[in-house]
Length: 329
Image (tube, rainbow, N blue to C red; front, side, top):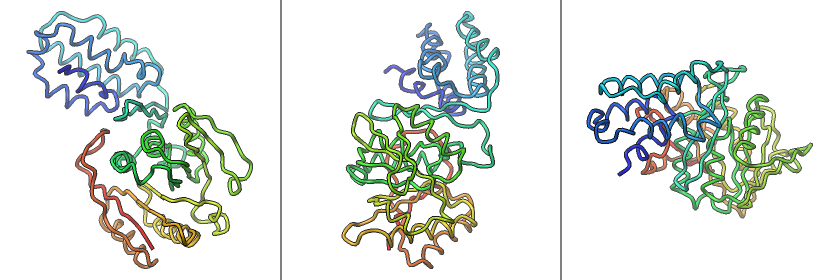
């Protein structure tokens, strides 16, 4: 088994995951058996073509390289110039407020996102990827038939992780991203372009959304959707088969408007077509999460927790509780 390939190919996605993997290796033995181990690790991480083209944050790369140097020096092996050169490159690079994160898909493809280095920026939390989005994307990959040849609407898409994974892995016919914050919508469009799609702008999204077409013929849209002000007449133009959302009910102030738009979408749905709704939530506060369930009950919506997927593909906090609710009328 090529240990560097299997344990470190995704390593630059998250530094702490990297350190856990490196720390768990029999480092002394590996260094003796594979003198070129450091070069292989560099090749699979900071010198990976994807990392060079779309680099993670400077702090992330710096911490990773410092940990790698620490492990290497503990073996009393000869210094590796390439290792210190890589660190020098990072230290000589100017700090920015944005970074990239890349995710490897089981199909062999990748999704790369440009996002903020700060959790809150531009007055929103929507410019970073949250754990529930990764969780929902993993679940979707194991439930391809829910999305295959369907029209999907995502509420609160953020910068696009879940939707891009579904479009590259689950073969939907149409996919509609949506959000309401202008900076988030701008970054979302940027990430769609970054992943090889081309957008054609339309003036009135309620008539014909922005269209994207990739080599597999999936049509993609970007909608500006404000849950507070949107009218049922506008929603009637959105004829989705599947609606998904991730990490959108973290705030009690948002829960009512989100429940209301689900009701409006269900009422607009043509009688002969069934609508599937899946909402992924990280349970940070049990009272807030119970409030969401209560609001669904008050709106006359049924809900149930769906079974978790079996395989973890991406890296996120394994200790957090994430549930996916299936919602119906």
